Image (cartoon, rainbow, N blue to C red):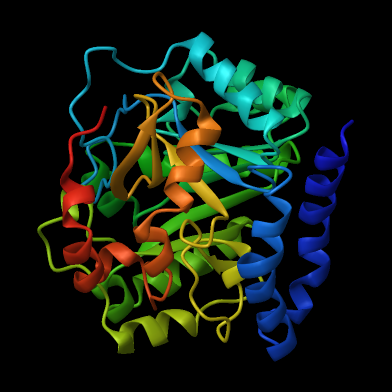
Amino acid sequence: MSTTTLLNKLSFRLRPLLSGFYGTSWFISFTAFYFRRLLPLARRFVPLYGVTVVLSMSYKCQCSCAHCGVGKAPAPAGGELTREEILKFIEDLAGLGGACVHFFGGEPLMAPALAEYVARTRELGMMASVDTNGLLLDEAMVLRLKAAGIERIRVSLDSPREEDHDVNRGIPGCWRKAVEGLRLCLKHGIPANVSIYATKENLANGDFEKMIALAREIGVGVRFLSSIQSGRWKEKDVPLSPEEIAKLRGLVASDVCWETEFLQHKDVPFWCNSMIGNKFDVSAYGDVLACCYLPASFGNLRKEPLETIVKRMWGSEMFRKGSDHFDCPMNDRNFTKLHEKELTAPRA
């Protein structure tokens, strides 16, 4: 096992031990110092040290969610990444010091080779997690993912009420399958989270708090996002106000995080996980993106080496000026106006 792999594993194991210090002034200062100073220094020697990549293997999905923020780009002539291309990407990422692959979509459980990708990720010393709507998360799938080495499964819920969730997703029975899938994860010892989003409506009517209560009743944690002006919500007035953000922050707890565990305390400033260089995304077509909700491509895996593309991204004007926000950068009109050309450019 390489020194880089050992350091990555150590950092992930330390995070739960440090959770009691989240929100303290010294920890906030140290975290800022780590991402602004220490991490760039480490990456002079290990180019992608510690990074998490959200990998969309396909945009196929059974649902038609009203809020879907991904999969809007038209398919290029080359189509989606092949099994061989995905395995090569995983191997390249590990060789450059990557720490984790989060499998995404579309619906990642529809990918026939998902278990193989998870197993290869783990063989190379990286962590592996997955985000799913839960429709295919039956006991056989849970056991298959566990055997492959999956370390966390996140299951999406849009409402505490079965009927509302199913209408929003366009699939009868989707809510029930999601809840059953979460319980199966617990049964077989796989850490799991409910993945939810905060809207003006569910913060005002109490549904957001009810979803947190439901997750606690099931026995899993919560990872949430604010409403993001992207995808099918691109032309809608969904961004939360500063007052709504303050209310949202007040709900952060030891079992409730906003996007990442670094934001698992109400007093921690918002840091976009992409803009601080903690993660980036790869589309189903091979485009390297800051985030699936931030549709600026910095290059394509089929045309250039991964390291070349990521260095270009992290050195871009967008990254130098795009890290100071109290919410997702896509909800900042100044940010989207400043980078309109990159955000609307056709992908490779």
